[in-house]
Picture 1 (cartoon, rainbow, N blue to C red):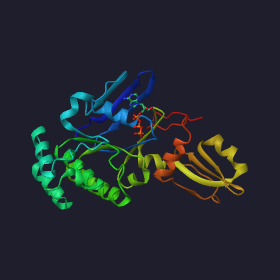
Picture 2: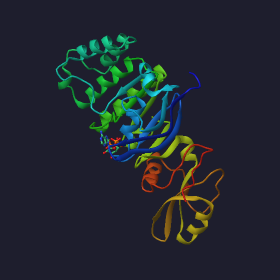
Picture 3: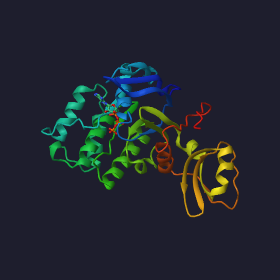
Picture 4: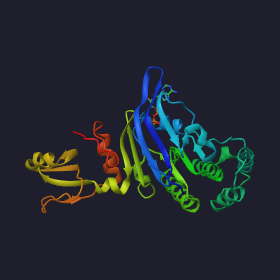
Length: 297
Ligand SMILES: Nc1ncnc2c1ncn2[C@@H]1O[C@H](COP(=O)(O)OP(=O)(O)OP(=O)(O)O)[C@@H](O)[C@H]1O
């Protein structure tokens, strides 16, 4: 694995007709990461992914992928769009033949073995498979291309919790076996907790959070304290979210370094979902990788 960044965006912006879908987006993601790209509907996730795989041209700024301008990296990138690229009248075997025809580095043995392991018959028409099976066939085709980077736009959409778990588990097995970097967008943050190690939160076309998930959770605390103590805490830390309780106030704060609080207050690290929701509820707050820390107040 080289030192190249997986993705680098510099002042990247995209406008559709009169409206900006992505504004002044600058970020870099190291290679070898499994990246969760999250944000509400219309945040710009698909736009960012389409720019990364060269399906869209930036209105302003630049995006490089695996060290090259986005479109040029395509032979090493597999992209799975929101609408799974399967022909319903084709059998699974037809789809695999199609994939082999289009991709010079196609890994036929891997594709056949993976689908057999998943119990998906090569003779079935893809249009008759369940949503979860279709997602698995599309994912198998993307991985069999032998990409360095796998870009997945909502691979879990429309799947039930069991199918989502199965898709994520088998994706992670493939990541471990093949040393893939992955960027995947999703609305269901809880599904990403055990698998992703890098988080990007997009909100209203801007990057709100970008960083290593362990580092981000380490830099935040959830605590419960008397309401009267809040001003003193806000003097020392960035309060990302404040919720009222009975006599007590719960806070999610950004606490760089060794944050010491009153030992009588319950203090813990946030889970990924708490962190994401707290930032989404406060679009003006941002946390970016050290040392580029944007003040939220
Ligand atoms: N082809 C297009 N023409 C005009 N506007 C578009 C086009 N594609 C997206 N947009 C607009 O750009 C903004 C960002 O859309 P995008 O699809 O990138 O968001 P998203 O985060 O992927 O949303 P979702 O989670 O709903 O899929 C939205 O306001 C959307 O309406």
